[in-house]
Image (cartoon, helix red, strand yellow):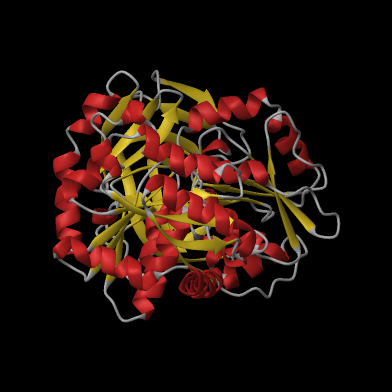
Length: 486
C-alpha cells in the first residue's frame, strides 16, 4: 500500500489544503489518488456517495482527486455539540457521543475500524494522501491516538511534518516537535514542509538548513502564500474570526457567528460575489442595520444556539430587520429557528423540552433520533440546484404555507413567506448554483454574474496544484510514499 501522511506542528497550518493540492497534482499526473483522514473534528460535513457523512475538507480533497467522496475517506468524525461533548460519527453514521470523561477509552477502540477503511481505500487506488489532525507534539493525547502517530505507526505510513511560517516560530515548532515526541514516533517522520511563506525565499535559506540539521529530516519544499487558497472552502471555524470589515461599496449580507455553527461553507458562493460583502457577526456586536440579507446558518445544537442568539440580542435585530423589509434565509438549523417552536422530546440535544422559535415562519420542528443524510436536486426561486440534506428533526407547516423548494420526486422542502423575503430550507450547498444565487440576490437588488461556484473551486484547485508542482519536490514525496510497499 502506497501512502504518505501530512501531519502539522499545530492546527490550521495548511495540512488540508496541501493534501487537496497534492491530490489534484497527482491526479493530473495520471495517478489514481485518494485522500484519507483517520479522525476529524469539524461541524462542516458533506454527504457521501454511499449515504454517510465525512468532514467537508475530505470531500474537497476527493473533488481534487476527481473522485466521489466516500465514508472510508474519513472513518471517524467528531462533531462538537457542547463544550465537553461531541457527536461520534463512524463510517458515516451516528454512533453516539464522546465526552471528556470517555474520550480516551472511546477512541482507542476505533483503531480497527480506521484501519479497515484504510485498507479498503488503499486497494482502490495507486496512492493515498493522509491528513493528520492537530499535532503529534500534543504528547498528552498520544495514548490511544488514532489521528496522528497512532495511525502512522499502526499502518506504517511515513510522515511529512508541516510547519506554518506565517504565524512565526516555524523553526522552533518543527525542531521542538522532534524534541518532545517519542523516538519511535520521530522515526516515522521522514521530512518537513514549510508552508505559507511570504517574501524572498533566499531569506529563509539558512533557517531551512538549520531545521534539516537539528531534526535529521530532509526538507520537501518551501511553499509560498498561494492566492488560490482563499477561493477554497474553509474547514475550521477559526477562519471566521478573521473576516474583513464592512465595505459600504457592496451590498451587505450578515451571518451571526453561532457557537456551534455548522456547514458555514454554504456562504462561500456569496463571498465570491463581487457585489456582495459577507460579514460574520461576532458575539457582542449587533447585526448591522445596513444588511440587505441575514443568513441564519446551520447549527450542530439548534436549541442551544437559539438561546445564545437571544442572549446576544440578535433576535431583536433579526425581527427589526424583517420589519424594515430585509430578506432572511435560514438554512437547516437556522430554518428551524425561524419557526414557532422547536421540540426535543427525546433529549437529542440536551434535556427534553420545547422552546419558542423566532416565530417568523409558522413551522413547528420536532427533533428525533434519525439523521437525514441525502444528496438532493431540486428547484427553488425558479432555478435548479444540487445540494444535500444533513439534519435531525422534521418541520411541519400550516397547510397554506408554500415550500421554498421542490425536490426531485415532488418532495417539498422548507418554506417561503408570501412576500418572498423570508425563506427557510433544509438544503445545504444550494447557493453554489449560479442560477439560484442570481435569483436570490436579485431579491436584494444585486446583479450576479459569478456563475456556478463549483467551477471557481475547481479552477482554484488547478492553480493550487500548479503552485505545489513548482515549490514542492513531488517526485521525492512519491518515492517516499512508494517505499511503503518496498
